[in-house]
Structure formats: structure tokens, C-alpha cells
Image (cartoon, rainbow, N blue to C red; front, side):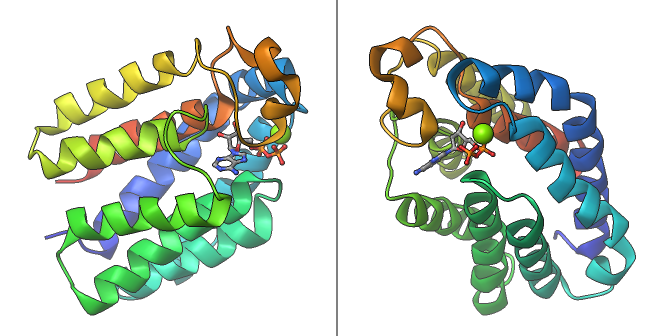
Length: 196
Ligand code: ADP
Ligand code: MG
């Protein structure tokens, strides 16, 4: 069972990973976007970390919703509402079906897609989030799930962006890793490191 203390460890690990990789995310976004993804993500997860005691005093589902709300308010850009939706939906789903983590994750990814009016293979964070849902549903061990996510990030490089700012570049977006895909991998790696 996952509880708020696991969530606390996961969120702090995510905040640390995002901070450590903020320059990398910014460089990826500078190549095919506007160069703010590192700063956006760092602002969001630093805000979550700063409020971690209040957030994780709540039951898991409520804590996840609080994270989503905080991320929507602080990340900004296109990715703020998307990452916010991911956590908000996890919380909403687990409030109804506690412990149905894989189902909740799938619904959360679908909610992100609905929010972004986007799908898989459009060179966005969904190119990572969807394969991870598949891997979780297949019952793969954590190390395999992370491997799937890593391969998915690499796979964004040869793809043309269809959604988000990078899509303005058309074919010139090809040859670059998607920044949101890379940040999603940071979240997944950090979560896999601390969740049971
Ligand atoms: P902005 O593009 O507003 O500057 P960020 O730089 O923080 O926002 O985030 C960019 C990332 O957001 C992209 O790399 C991509 O993964 C993701 N993204 C942007 N638009 C969409 C969308 N419509 N659907 C899914 N993901 C998207
Ligand atoms: Mg940007």
C-alpha cells in the first residue's frame, strides 16, 4: 500500500532530481521551444517541497490533489496544467478507488491527453507517460518500467512535434529530445526509487 509518507519521499526525490537537471531541461527546451522548461519545473516542485509537511499531512488522495493544484499554480507554461492534471486526476481516482494505482495512473494519463488535446507519438511528455501505463498494466517490475520510460524519451528524438511550441518548428523539431518527455522520466525514475 502506498501512503502519504511514500508520497512525501517521492515528491522530495522528484524536487531534487528536477533541481539537479533544471539546466538540462532548459537546454532541451531552448533547442525546440522557449528555454523555460527547467525553470518552470523547478519552480513547481520547489513549491511542492516547500509545502511538503502540509501536503503530506493529508490522506494520500487529498495530498495528490493538493500537489496537482500547487503545480498548476506554480509551473506555468503548457506543462503546468498538464502535470497538474496528472496529479489531480491521480488524487481524484484514488479517492474513489483507493489502492487501484495502475487504473488511477492510466486515467491520469488520459486526462493529461484530454487537457493537451494530444496523444502518443506527438513528441510530448505523453510519449513517456503512455508506455509507462502499458508497462504497469503488464505488471512489469519497476526496473523494466523505468527502462521503458528511458527508451521512450530517446524515441522522441526522431519524431516531429505535433503539439506544443516545438510544433511551430515543423520538421526542424526532428533530431531533438522533447523536454517534457525528459522531465517525465525524471519523475518516474525518482518515484520508482522510493515507492514500494
Ligand atoms: P511552454 O511550451 O509553454 O514553454 P514548457 O516549456 O514548460 O511550456 O513545457 C513544454 C513541454 O510541454 C513540451 O516539451 C511537451 O512535452 C509538453 N507539451 C506542450 N504542449 C503539449 C500538449 N498539447 N500536450 C502534451 N504535452 C505538451
Ligand atoms: Mg518552454
